[in-house]
Length: 258
Ligand SMILES: Nc1ncnc2c1ncn2[C@@H]1O[C@H](COP(=O)(O)OP(=O)(O)OP(=O)(O)O)[C@@H](O)[C@H]1O
Image (cartoon, rainbow, N blue to C red; front, side, top):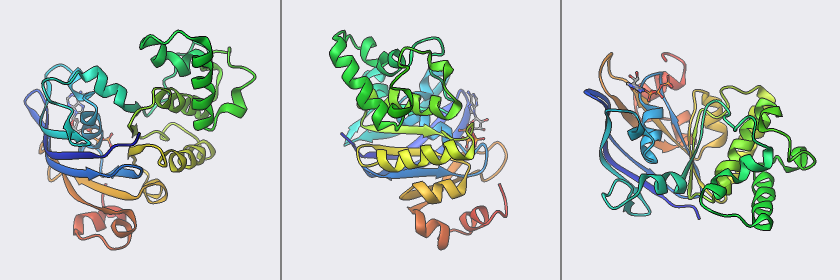
């Protein structure tokens, strides 16, 4: 079930390095929010803070709140592993388990959570592969290794694996950057379908992609070398790309820097 995320006064550190300062963002459910901005401004860092992936890096920490339907995912009572189950993630490079079968890749998370019933696993496998627009291409070779698929198919397999555990939110960190234009369009179409059921946050360097797939866009910037990245503005995507409030946003989207 899609849930909303509210980020409040988020400050993110790698050891002593203050990477991101004072980010406050509201991410509505059943929509796509894009994070754009020049390299190093902290887009991926903010994304990874949303499901507590940031803290797996030694010395990395977060101050502030990330609320999932009002519940702080950083509350002391909350298990970070449970957060990562609820807020799934798809990475830049497709990362299926290469020697594991396509079927086993999709249901890996469910197996880990203890589901053993074969009929149930097969049902989830088919539903997830259909959800990721991959079923027709792989239904006759579910026992072949995940690594035998093309890059674009592998990325859809990773999306199937992520949705198999029915998360509330899907985080996507430049999910198309390793893909050719046709596979990219397939993933973009898929994102548009998935937003009916999930809350999606996507980091992208590709501004046309942000314009095509997202409902709202957040522009991050870096005031100077060594300084923390900041959120400059967030608004409806059509407005960010046609009539942004801040000059820095306009300069960035018109290609004047970054
Ligand atoms: N593991 C890490 N340890 C220390 N510093 C890091 C680490 N990962 C990122 N940083 C730093 O944090 C800042 C933000 O990085 P981040 O990767 O979030 O930026 P980004 O906007 O996603 O960049 P890009 O578009 O190039 O991927 C940068 O200064 C980066 O060097």
